[in-house]
Image 1 (cartoon, helix red, strand yellow):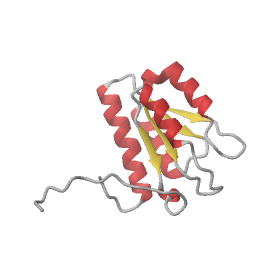
Image 2 (tube, one colour):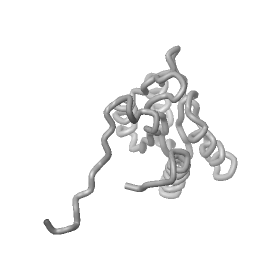
Image 3 (cartoon, one colour):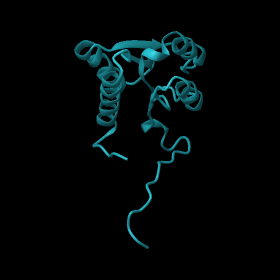
Length: 140
């Protein structure tokens, strides 16, 4: 677990770090998949990576409620899954409150070995959010 000074810093670190790690390991993995309703904390570093690091941004459509169209994600991954560096979506939209289908996104991404970053800042207090726990290294 890594703690940062805030959500924007965490998103920046996740998008850039995942992209660099994935594209370094496999030069084909240059696509950053984000929804069209992402917060600028995701969009800004993604577009920065496009301008400075050769990333390709894929803007995934949402429905009339602001929810990611899973069929569009599925089609993108079927066509270009071996080129996807990461998927980044906000769990809960900060403006309209739409909850994104995170379990569906993760299940699809897993098929193609694509990591998923979810900005969960707005989800806290709206849905149950749990963090992974490390085993203690101290003796009882």
